[in-house]
Image 1: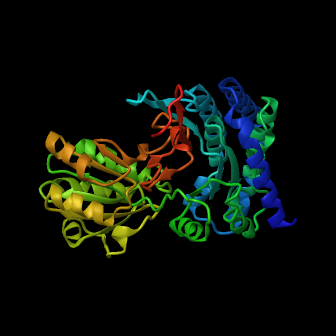
Image 2: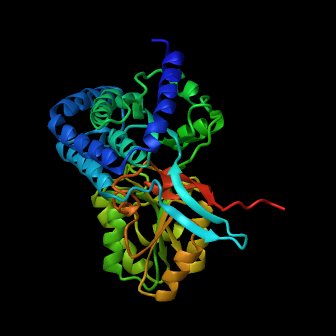
Image 3: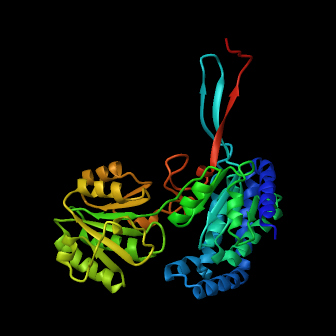
Amino acid sequence: MDVRQTVIDLCKAARAATRPLATASTDAKNRCLKDAATRLRAQCAQVSEANRHDVERGRAGGLSAALLDRLTLTEARVDAMAKGLEEVADLPDPVGETMARWRRPNGLEIGQVRIPLGVVGIIYESRPNVTADAAALCLKAGNAVILKGGSEAIRSNAAIAKILSDAAAGAGLPAAAIQLIPTTDREAVQVLLKQSQYVDVIVPRGGESLIRAITEASSIPVIQHYAGVCHTYVDEQADLRMAEEICFNAKVQRPGVCNAMENMLVHAAVAPAFLPSMLKRFGDAQVELRGCARTRALVSGVLPASEDDWRTEYLDLILAVKVVDSLDEAIQFINTHGTGHSDAIVTKHYDHARRFQNEVDSAAVYVNASTRFTDGYEFGFGAEVGISTNRLHARGPMGLRELTTYKYVISGNGQIRE
């Protein structure tokens, strides 16, 4: 395979697909997505077999338990992908939506209207469900998508992408609307990142090192999702039973994902009552605990936390624990050590809750709920193409509206500028 030419040809085909996609009817896009869901369920055995090969190769290659979990497709996860396609189909079509309209004193009528971004390149690791989620959202928002999954999931991604591309063609849409780069050669990514004449935006999903490397190499705008160093702060006014359930869920329910808690902060006034039972529960769940000196004074067996621990996205059953003296200290700590992803407070105090939400500088800020909800599906977007920690264009889970831009449409009756 000529990797360079293959990638360029995919990009050219995607650009050619954008014009019919931009004007495609909502009905055609929805038919594509619903048919893709039907095909995905019908071909679950084939998708699972392809995934089995990927998982076996990953296990032999030494992938961690957390990464193997992200890679694995169970029947339930395949069905969840299909449901995600159906949910995206049921969402309102953002293309053509009038965001604002006003009339100028000279009689000009100005409207701001949503349009597709164009061609979206998505580079991701491990999780094959991203193939379906990203393709569905891009297509519904009128964008062509070029998918570059990780080498560990090449068979799974190829099986899913073919189902989606076939469904697009079956609905009368360009088959090139959904394309997967069919090689694990790393050169493919470098070529893709230079195709600014064909690709409008790159969305990387993966570890921080991958995202930084893509951002530095790309000549195309990149929407970053850097590390998810997420915090939960147990306030002095917290319901401690609620706090225990929230913290346990945020760390243990699925530790290998970006919205899992990595740092737990506890107010000194409740630390003696809260930490012993909480940390025992974590220990029983095989969570490795690293704590500040005050945490270790309250609970034995906790490893000392280093400065690096407060800034590390473990993506594993490892948790850093710190005792703080005030809400101010908790907010300052989060804004200093966090990554702007998702942070939570557990409290019964209304003013503390409002201050936390107003002053913590993150894409998603929770009161009395687990950070695990930062997810396009849980937010009602049907799926997501990523969770942006950027400030420009999009922030947080990226759904349909985040995959559009806008243009101004102006109507007059002969006005000229003096």
